Image (cartoon, rainbow, N blue to C red; front, side):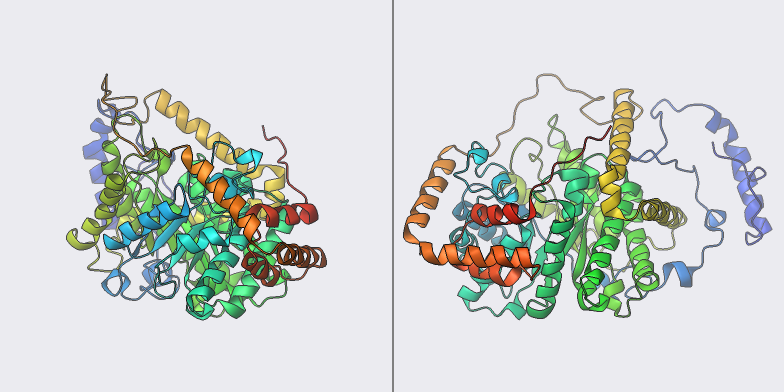
Length: 566
């Protein structure tokens, strides 16, 4: 049990009758708290944060509803970035999709749109993410396996065949090669006759979290940051509806961080991008309105809700007080949420439907603007049609049957939620101070600070699972022997052969001189410090490939090798 009322410092803002009520309750519950309950050994969050046995008015001593809570659509946006929240517009239902060839993924896109999905989300295979073509030695065995194979504009044209890019928004999960993907997407829109100022969507483009967690980087941090800010300035002028970055805590959490570390490192990455944008000569309100975020939704229901609410408050305060932003859109933390892939289990996979539902509901109650629900089989393979449709139906049931969309921030003012939200905020700003003391997030990454913090948190969680302090149903408790395997999606090796054959045919048919000229112009722009986006768009239009473009950048920027972290 926590400290009693008598042991805590007396807060003069708490009425005596509340303090007396606390003492009375603690006395009545004292005996029960002495005994360890038979069903649970650890009353902490998934992240290991302590949880008080009861939240009450004295838990929120010093809490000011006008200052700390506010109103939906108003600073500090704790209760949401839109005045009416889901009553005015539901979150975007955006199922992650991408596998095999561009044609196969295009068929999955249409399948999802036909079943009520409202936005597209594209997964690229590893060779594209690392800047290799499908015929490269490094791509062997990986073509189309964990995302769609995209080698050139020809693939991107097929990927978005019969899809109106002026009506449907698209999210693309890609980072080191993000400017190439953006250039291809804009070239496809142009071929469709869609003006760039009508094109909407989001590019992940978050290179800092690659160094921290996911490790799909190519170039060193500083030239990589230059590519990010080039996209900021280009899209501010030419693609005003495009979210130029989705600053991602998702992969930080998947690597084993706590909820607080996910929140703090993600938002501090955002601070770093703003800092680099300003150093590149842009005004904060010219690019900050198009910054967006991407968070994980894990199993601890209230911890996740508090994390999302704190994120909005922290970002609003930081943009106003640290950077002097004036545009309300610069202060509003808009974010996508994906349920936790690391929480899915291969054992008893249908339990994953329940986990995903809890996580998705936390995202909605936390005010997410966009949501992906994982499929029950995603821990085993890319999702099947059946599993991905069930995941989409999970969102639709929450939206249309649960009633949670009827009112904005329905948990606002709840003692427990507000206490956890404030605790998240304080912990986040403490991490900010530690990272600032190191010189910034780039310097902290180079020193291995966030990597070590995540490593320690992941180790602590695994020890708790191994000791059964944390129960994972079907894994370390309630285990079943001799489970029947479920049918999963399999990507045939013929996909690689077809992709390589199509790429070879493309290289034979394209204008080689135009490709060489465009790559030369791109190389010069990289070396001269000019914005890379205009020559990139021209290069992809000649059907220069992802690998060829990446090789030009490797030649100018070099590649990055991470220092060992212990």
